[in-house]
Length: 306
Image (cartoon, rainbow, N blue to C red; front, top):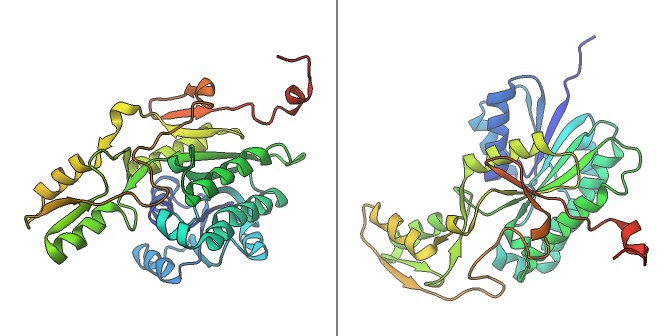
């Protein structure tokens, strides 16, 4: 009888981070696992299929995390889950709030429930964002709720041997719809690129560093953690400085003009809140972790505890 290989499921696997993770898994694990790439983006799945040249250990699953029955089917026989499926654009989520909730919250809940329901999943890692910290946008709020769902699920999994954790990313360079892609189009159109605000800052992480971070989190996780990159305020960059450097490398000269922040868009992002700071711990050169006692119900319910 042919032995069935364990599977790794990557939701949102046709996206920039998901597809980069799939390619790294293929490079490092060879044919030890089968990989299930789950996405609602048919064209994105087809593009990845062409790029991977129909690799026989990769399965391409078309479906939405909004539909519990579909993600439940995809979860059967899976050992590790990376849940990256989400709507990520701040402005579009503000304009389409019901859809953002359906995908980012209900979709995450469905994926967690399906992972707990199967007997095979051992590790579940949720891909979050620094916009979940003190959120001012709907998108950030949905990702914060996603984090809380993942962490809380460790308390309701019963006897299932599964750990569920979250990983927070800053801005990842080379993702679809990134600022560099927008600048390129603006430069070609009218020779001007838009920087939202002269004082706006962000953390930036190259996509390969983001994948390295994810893989290391999988190795470190036990369940209930929120992992963040080991970055400090010194690692932030002013967007206008990044724009000037980018513009200097282009064949066409251009001009920087300033716009204004969208509703819900922050001038600066942080990787953890003040409430989380006491529970922050450095694990490796690349990874920090927050192990918050949010779900210590016995402590909450004991009036004698200070």
